Length: 411
Image 1: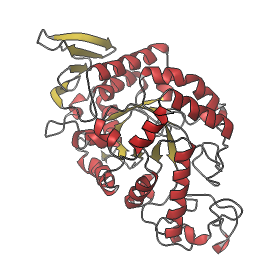
Image 2 (image 1 turned 90 degrees about the vertical axis):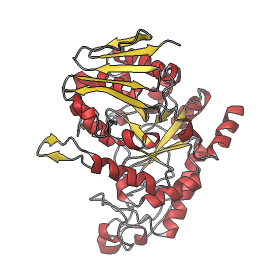
Image 3 (image 1 turned 180 degrees about the vertical axis):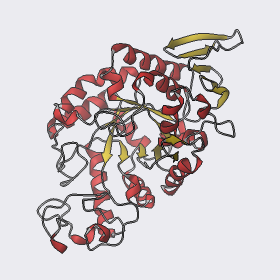
Image 4 (image 1 turned 45 degrees about the vertical axis):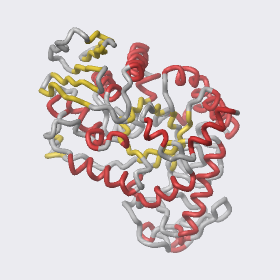
């Protein structure tokens, strides 16, 4: 019980984990996971997840949903889903707790599928299930009797009107219940859909230990070519973080978009005009959650995939740089064993090199076929085909793979 008490004590200070900056997240699913006994599958992997050094596992939406993947929720209090039963979920949560890895809940509260027809003949009422809202809980722009949306619409389904006090009160009660079930962290789905001030309110009330928002809109392109300057893109993510009262981090979609072009032989993209990393990581690293792919961009959806033959260069970058890195299930468990081993090695180097979310970055080279940088004062990295190594003799090669090498300074 001591560990549980510590977790509760820690959670009362919303900033503790953000300040330490030592998190490494694991996305524990893909778009096809609902087809398997997923909670059981993950439970078997918890010892390996913990040993590898992950601090939190992002789980797919664990509640009743109209779609098997979980992103069209209906009864928020029903913990049986296509991923498994409530009992299987609770066994997984217990196992994670035992191994001191936090469980991250996927919070889908932009929209909710109705149970009965109401205003306009639409399914915009929630009779017969917990949180039995009427049409006033649904935004007027998606067929309800509530107010206009405070964000972008998720089309084709009733969008929740967070400006209604009764809605927020019910959502807070539900989030607090999720915390009591054993979820310690939150990932906010489709965070563009409603004002970030409501996320601030929800975090303050439910006190997750770590929060991350999915604020995803398109990078800046000229035709099909990614523009060099993505400042306006990262600024929008930063504005969202700021509006959460700085309580939530956000996925660094800017870095993902730039990095997946850079590894194709355009490493000049990885240095902005001020000499800093070009994503959210370069401006507000303690709130930037970096990643290579997720269930939307990669997996079988592949909306915006990282080039598959450059995966390890991507991980070499995010696992040695500031921000909070995330590893995707497909790369860790569905790739070949060598990828799993290389990622674990990179995570070891991150820890032994004392890299954290605010570590400094001194970029030495950023040209077509070569990127090199010193991170903190103990780690040096080179990515790309170009030949390069640090000149000082105090650097020792720590690991290398296809098109990357990392050196550590001997103490």
